[in-house]
Image 1: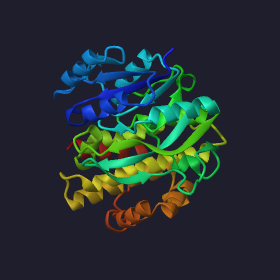
Image 2: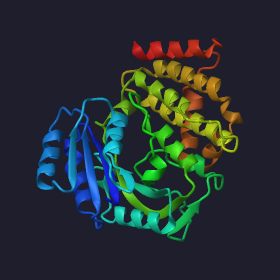
Image 3: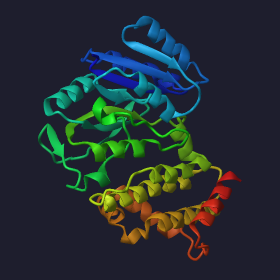
Image 4: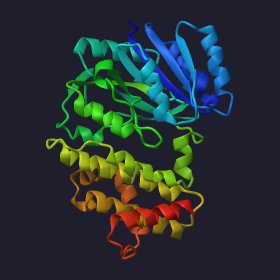
Length: 341
């Protein structure tokens, strides 16, 4: 049985694709399969994929799918994967040469359901920051306890800096046809896992790509931003033990996404203020007042960037007494109309 399946959804990534695939082929750990799912790219991505498949037929499998989004592409990969463990890599990112070896050996030696490692942020081929979960940790590994150290509030809910056992994934799949599909899938695995091990190493390189789906959403008006609410609604909050954390996670993730609306190029400052005020009111209707939320206060206290950003947003982008409607559904429909026009 193959030890690790690496699943890579691909959409218009020709600029970054060779770096990504080469980083997988050059791994010091060889017992892997690489499943590349083309999501109906309109650039030369498919040609690049087919060239790699021709040259590495025993290592690479290419699937040419229809344009149904990242969640659908990853699900195709999961259905085809034969590995004991599954890893997700985005097509504009790349791995360190020993990422899979370290993650796999950690998983096997600790019997972990999930191995979690840190990542670097890369722009124009230069690393500009490292996102470290436990910056003061001296040991190479740490068993993560979900209710300690506010782990759930600090965890990145993307799948790409984690190695998952096939057992923990089971029959579950990513939500499809929405943006922000990562959070429900990843959080479900975290909640379900008996053992999560932190590997104290930056093994994944996240490349900021302004032309990616998420990159474009960062700078341009898009009604799909409300998918974050749908994504959060998919998270199971039935666990009494974790309910306070899960409510905080939903609130914080929505705020992170909605804060980016100030970067949208199509809106005037006044339009941004109106939109942001309604979005925050929607968050409060769904998850309660920000100031009363434990997770919001924790993140604001411990994340200086988030704290400064919220100070700016609250001072300059919230309009007092703008929202008089008390019905959540009507506020949602109003925001949706703003985004469509």
